[in-house]
Length: 358
Ligand SMILES: Cc1ncc(COP(=O)(O)O)c(C=O)c1O
Image 1 (tube, rainbow, N blue to C red):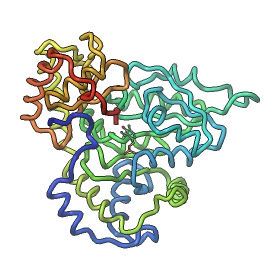
Image 2 (image 1 turned 180 degrees about the horizontal axis):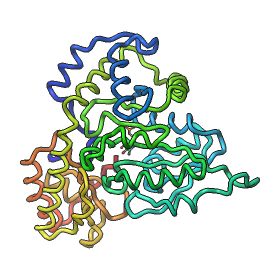
Image 3 (image 1 turned 120 degrees about the horizontal axis):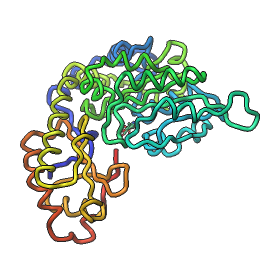
């Protein structure tokens, strides 16, 4: 099987496994794990903030950031395709009592004018105070799209004009960094809190960071404990994070090149893939334009030995390149995907466990 469902599927490499095995660990809940502390210090510097907190998942990192930045009853603005808005189980409402205002965008990137229009009148006695502005970079639901620094600065400046605080869901920020050439800290500094996931393109088995000011991260640490995320010998996984930051960042360019190679191969085979949308490690294939139902298309692909997932938009499939996808895999996929989508319809059970877009 060539598994292009998502970049969370990666297996730890031999080098990463060695780093895990050799990790010096302690009780991280007591702040006695030197490897976790080293990763947090590295993450803070990387993201351009005073302090960072190591967490098990990017979902927890986003949710803690929102809680730190808001009061119950506040409103959060972001694009409607964002992971925080669509795929975190309504966490902002559950954990922090927040109202979400979803902006409509073609690809996850919105404009300063949209921010301006979204802000409720300050002091209004009937409306939720608009408080937090969220940006996701790269944007998963938008197809791995990159916010360039000028775009971020424009919406951030508009948000600040209205007194908003800003959160960056940078689960795949390093993909944006590699694609744009902009340092992570330059992006991070535009925000009050920034998250980074270690278990997507970076290839760790788990782990994420949230970064911000010392004061905000003190609150984040308390919330981490409150939500049951304060761990013990977590240096076993923090070691993987340090290893990934040393060895798996520049190579994200290989994933981006593989995605482009795949996209170009599919276009050459006559499939509906928009090359302009391929900015990082995601390729979107419009099954609807082929007259195929997305479930049906996923089933056909599985039958040929290629796994894709659904993109956020109806009828669109997603192929994601990552550490465990080689150039040879891509070339094979370029053969198999057109064959699958022009072949006979699959049996119903082949489409049964079609994957979700994470
Ligand atoms: C943009 C973005 N943010 C946050 C997350 C959450 O990551 P996790 O599922 O590891 O908590 C994901 C997962 O796909 C994501 O794509």
